[in-house]
Length: 238
Image (cartoon, rainbow, N blue to C red):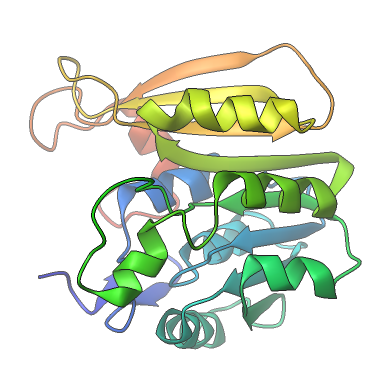
């Protein structure tokens, strides 16, 4: 059973009420996304608020909007933001992304999302976890079209996905005018196939930057230098 909280170097994430707990996917995206030059950031499906908090720590000048449809996750994110050093710069919104798009005229320099992705899997008995993990709440196309609407012309969209959904997601993105700029393949160990992939898109095509990260390169808990360097400002263990 997951702990009711997860402690990082500069903030703590309370997660007892949230369906989706702190995981490697969110931490990697929060550490990898290109947030340093962004003045305005949107976190779609913020969950516990993890990625919004990581972006606030990394970029001390950005203002961040964090949207979450599920009521208890929203309450958890709001608590975590209010308990952080950056509550004045993060706004948590309890709404669907589809509704949020209709209500704002803002353009964002960076949009990040750790989206639902169990496209065709059986529904989970826990409704909250189903909301967090099934794309019938927010389809890839709805996410991408919303991103295009809210993203500045020079803005960046960063997302983490299971690797086997990369082709589908990238095709929908490119068909709608988002181009793949940067890729990080994530492998659990040297001998295992990659399971996750981090993608960065923009409205203008540029030369693709592609890298691979191995999490445990030297056996169990033998973390790679790449992984440690990327997450050292957050994880207590590094």
